[in-house]
Image (cartoon, rainbow, N blue to C red; front, top):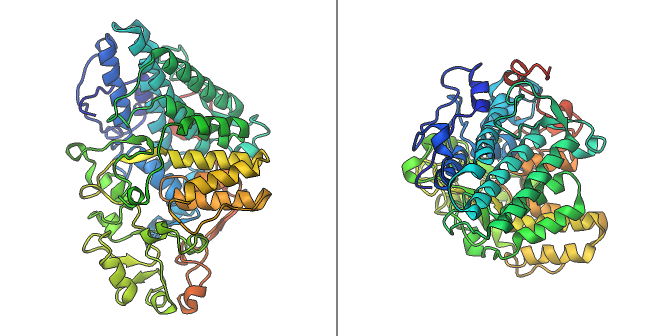
Length: 524
């Protein structure tokens, strides 16, 4: 992403009007007027690069507000069921999903999500509204417009998973969804606009993606091999597959997932162990971060990378839950990317937070080659996600082909297609575990196996909380009891070892922030 344009949209100004001056801290790589920005297809392409750049930009002085990385870590990983930010108990209110944040209309941790995605939407709308009149080939116009539609659909989807109720509780979509701002020139946008229903929200997501799919086909174009940070036809299908899964539209989810993964090669075990900081054969869409445009201590890997020199990772590493990894056979090489205690002796080297300061497990962690030299060592800490450059920089994926296998398999379970689901699970697992044989489970038992492997394979990639929300499963974090050794029920310190019922805290629905309600008279 060598050059880009950021457009100051009305939707951005709407939120800025009621925020402090540092609410938006964005320095364009290139600045131009709105008229000039869309005068040619070349400029429209630069504006599209600007939308991609927004995914790795710091917006608030509040710690960690870093575009898409914040959504992955703060909204999905750290407050989920399977992930622990070791000993960082000062953030327990947020990561224990307390109403202090979820139901607060004023906290920055709430309105940041709303602001960030409507900023993406507002800028995508500018491209969608203007590209048809730009000077340039019609095929380029179609391709750029399709990409902008995918950005918008993705943002609508992300907003709906957090600010909307889960689909199974929505009375088939009758519950409130989000505000559907679909044009920068709409006389109601960005001000007075009502909440659409959840059904209307997903109808719009589907429409945007169907339109994008048609435009990609019409254009006949392809993105450059280096442009993994921009969507293409496969990504349009992937976003629709993920949205359909959340909406419990099983047939659409399976169909789109199969189409999305077509042409991609699943990563090898070596690729899986490479740190997840650069694109490989199965990355479909990701966020690009260059060393000369890094967010430094606010970068995604500064909070989760096991080798990061940032204090947020060195002092408070990220760990997988004992309860989850114990379900994965020792023959699965992905387990090697976690510091799993091997004996009761190693287990009892830990303190009540899971930290170890001497002994064989401590030595294994220090000598792994996966941690910064002054990093604290914790049992079950992850080595899967590692920074490409210090203090915590690197690109990271939004969609990859393996997820599409899991989506298709999960959907097939609900469609009663057990043999198809068994084969998909085998295909996505066998390369990591030579001892794995095709599952003979059926029904609910097969679905549980599919979702267990999904949780493990996609660990740390931003699915934890959203998956448990859509599954309507309680979050149950089991406590670390060092004295019991390997028989300990769990690995969470007492502060995080809690149960969060699926129907608690407004059924995991974030409140619409006052930054919207104060400006939009149609929302209370």
